[in-house]
Image 1 (cartoon, rainbow, N blue to C red):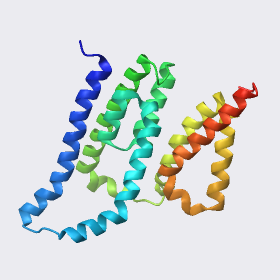
Image 2: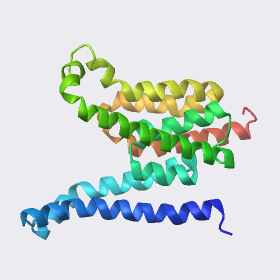
Image 3: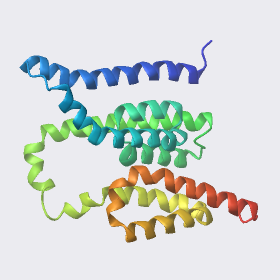
Image 4: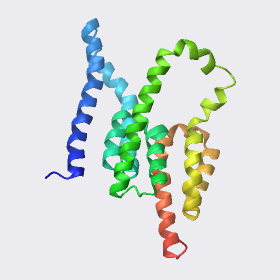
Length: 217
């Protein structure tokens, strides 16, 4: 009998392959419909400018987020997207509320349910937003709400940080101070958050190792 994780890997690969195929077929369908095909050299020139960044970020995100989300949550999260701003915070918050570890079987189930629920809610909200855009646009573009939209991501991770930093503040203080100093010294690095997440993780692991050897954690 196939185990749960084997089953998740089997179907996860099928869905990932299907998602990649559909994403590739969208521009192909447009080209077929309009009978307009870009020259290969221009496609490669455009890819060389952006693909290495996305490939690097993709590899880093898999290595960073997979241990947090578990098997099912990882496949579902990467297929539906918005990991940093939605899926990861939802999964971590759900596991925190259920008092389970990400590496446990319970954590695996909770993470998958949280990511799935987030994807469904996001789809419903987007659908409602599209239908009601004409009515909501003046409100959403108002100067009063602009600061709120500019701070959605910091608010999400700030709320999570309060929980996790308070639990392991000795470990969290080193990467936190490092990143604050780094972003204050080089503000332009704010656009490279995806690459710097694993850097912070490595610093936290190194700090944990040192504190553990000294018997401080």
